[in-house]
Structures are given as structure tokens and as C-alpha cells.
Image (cartoon, rainbow, N blue to C red; front, side, top):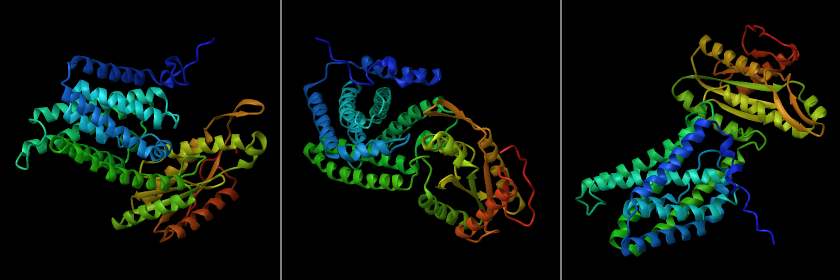
Length: 434
């Protein structure tokens, strides 16, 4: 009788990790070895009270995960790169209350349960889960060291050092965990941007809030253990609030390109313009249309066309600043908002420079696709671009879009693969075959 094969993804030789740059793989291995070494260095026979407390925290985490499993699976699927799970309320409490080795055991069990109930159903690679567990072990050890140095948890309202120590422990946990995760991302990709490295402001605020609840849970356990059950209702409400935000993000995202869709882009662009206008800065909009895109679909099929759209979207995102907004307006049309431009001719010159850079990026793009005829590379793409400044060419976003759209069609009529910026003077851009 044949032995059953292990679940897909459990064979280390098949892990996607080994296809990452060597420097990223090196950091992953160093962090995981450091976590194991830290646990080994603190191995000691725990007291029965500490074991009971560890079991209690693990039970609370399991109950928490079971109650929020459906929500967390949706969050895990919706997350792109950064993802903050709210189990840190229990791992942080364990870091404050338990010796490092026992806290690491709690973290291992908590994350093993999370893997079974949330991460594996969401098809998260095993190596990412192992690395995340290692970073949390090191972050928890850092938090434990800070609290220990401050003299332990606050013993009363007059214990200022204890309160300061807990606040410093929150900071240590966040900094260690964030740096270790950001380090792998930075070593895996060419500068992905600050948001991709450390997550968004509201994601980090969520993590800090969760850790603060973990600190309160630790103090509560020290005084009246069963009152810690009162942490569960607010943390579950927080889960649902975060889920609503994630669903809003999914609803505003174009599934084929990962960019904002038309409605999402216009809503975000309107908010960004308000901030730009408050500081009396100028902005610009670019509308981009892939030339002869129907020929790609007709020649290679719509799936190949979707690959082209995704590749173009990635080039557009890479070709602008982090604060610029890129969206898909539908079909083969894209739109970019450039906020906080210099006033006057300098701003218009920067708008043209960005448009020309995007035009060149698309013209140089080679897209590997899989078609019924085999693997092919699609090249020779081009894009026509129209631009308009706000408030010079249009006082509102809608007015500027209409002017930019007219400029786009001027570029189309002039031969395509061109940039046309609204204004009294039009300077033809360099043109290549297309």
C-alpha cells in the first residue's frame, strides 16, 4: 500500500522561496535560524503556573480565530503584500507575561492553528508562513526584553516606569516585525515604494491598536484573569470593521490589472485634489489609450490581451511617483492623476515628461503570453496620451478629464504613439513605428 503524499506546498524543494534573489533567501534563513537560536538559548523548565497561563492564552487565541475564521480568510485573500492579523493581541500578551521560550511555543501553536484555518485555505505559501512565525518570535522576544528592563508590567497607576515600558514594548514589537518583513520585500523587488515595504498608515495603526489591546489583556490577566474574555467582543467588532474596509477596496479595484477601477479612481482622485487645492498646488491628469489593442485580442485571444493589460498597468505604476494615482478607465484606457506639481510652466513641463516616460515604457515593453499556438512574446505596443492641468485647463476633475480626452484624440488623429498636452502650443513628441 502506497504511503500518502504530503499536502501540496509542504515539500521544501518546491517552495517558491528558492526562486527569489539569493540575498532575500539569505535573510529569510538568517531570521529563521535566529528565532530557533533564541528559543534554544532560553530553554528552561517552566513553572506549572507559566504552563497554565500559556495554555490559557493559546485557548483564547484558538477561540478568537474560530470566531473570526470567515472574516480572516477574506482579509487574507484581499491583502496584496502587507497583511496584519489580529492574533497579535495574544502573541503580545504572551510576550509580556511568559519567558521567551514559552512565549515562542504559544506563538508557534497560534500560527499553526492560523495556518490550518486561514492561511492554507487562502493558498498562502508555506515558506511565507514559516518566516512570519519567525519574525513574530523575534518581535515578541524584543518586547519581553523591553518590559523586563523596565521592571515588569505596571503594578499600579503610580508605576510610570511600567507604563512607559509597555509603550516601549509595543514600539519594539512593531519595529522588529516591520523591519524584518520590509527587509525581505526590499531584497526581493527593486525599490517597491514605502507603502509596499511597511504597509499603509491605517494598517500600522491597526497593528498598534491590537498590540495595545494585548497589553491591556496582559495587565488584566495579572489582576483578574477571567476578565480577559472581555477582550474578545471588541476584537471581533474590529475584525468586522476591517473587513468592511477590505471589501470596499476590492470593489474599487480592477481585477485584471490590480489598479483602481474607474469609480475607485475618481473617488480617490477627488479626495487627493481637495488636499492639493488646500495647499494651493497644481495637479494634472493623463488619459492613455493603447493603440490598436483590438489586434492583440484578435491575433492572440482575450487571455493574452489581459496579460498585456496587466503588464502595461505594472509599467504605468512603476513609471510614476508613489503619490500619483493610476487607474483603469475601462477597455484599453488608463488614467493617471499627478498631484502636487509645480505651478505654471514647470508643472506643465513635468506633466509632459511623465507622459513621455510612460509612452516610452509601453513602447519598450515585451509581454510573454501563453496562447493556443504556444508561448509567445508580444512587443511593438504603443500608447497615445492626452494631458490637462488643474486648474489651468479645467477647474474640476471632470472638466480636466474632458480636456485631456480631447487631447488624447488629437494624439490619435496625429498618428498615435504620441503625447498631446492641452494648451495654446503643441510640440509634437518623438514618434516610433506603431
